Amino acid sequence: MTLDELTHVSSWLTQDRIDAAILVAVNVIAALVILLIALSVSAWAKGRVTALSNRYKRLDDTLFSFLGNIVKYLILAIGVIFILNRFGIQTTSLAALIGAAGLAIGLALQGALSNLAAGVMIIMFRPFRQGDFIDAGSESGTVTEIQLFYVMLTTYDGIQVIMPNSDIWKSAITNYSANPTRMMDLTIGVAYNADLKKTQEVLEAVSSSDPRAMTDPAPVIRVKNLGDSSVDFTFRVWASTADYWSLRSEMIRKIKVEFDANGIGIPFPTRTLEVVEVPRIETAQARQETGTA
Picture 1 (spheres, helix red, strand yellow):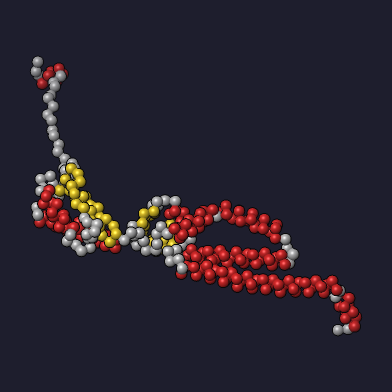
Picture 2 (tube, helix red, strand yellow):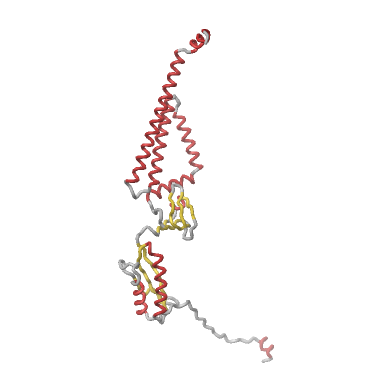
């Protein structure tokens, strides 16, 4: 480098430019430090929030993961604001711009946000869990997956159904697996000429013949109604939820077998038609046609 070049460089490196370069370097180093601190603090905070799932077993892990991510990105956003302030960028107008953009995005994604809000409510209040059989909206099936935006069901015939959380939350939810026991409520019709006392004894014997049928609460077997073609009995037996469907099928089979063995008829719906003969009224024209006066 020649003397003229050195002189030119020295004349360019004024004190103001040196101070500005030092300030930029300091700001860059400070920004990196702030970014590292924000990353470490956000990761630590997310881990602490996620770890709360071990203390509250009744709440789903997905909820704490979601809250942990919110805390993480909130801390990172604060870190970015500090970095922008470090470089002299006014964040007030930037915050207004972000707010306006957030409003526009919120209006465009209001359906997705309603699903998100419903997903948070489902995870917090836990009207059902994974593995429960539910009836919600127009669908029913076993819950296989609970996410923030949707719930995945598998129907009894193996079809996968994905339901938006908002559709589930705004409708009545029937959870068939929530309680450990269920009552089997059957209506058994017998012929009017059947011996009601014997029918009662047969039904009681059937209800106590299977160990899966609970004795507490005790079975309830009573005459319910005098129907159009049958005497109807109420047949109520309690069972564990896991045994409900298999026991119900077995009870219906045993009732038919025992009724046949004891000569108790199960009537078909019948209808009696009464034919009334209407007297024939002959008109004058008809008498002329037949040749009668």
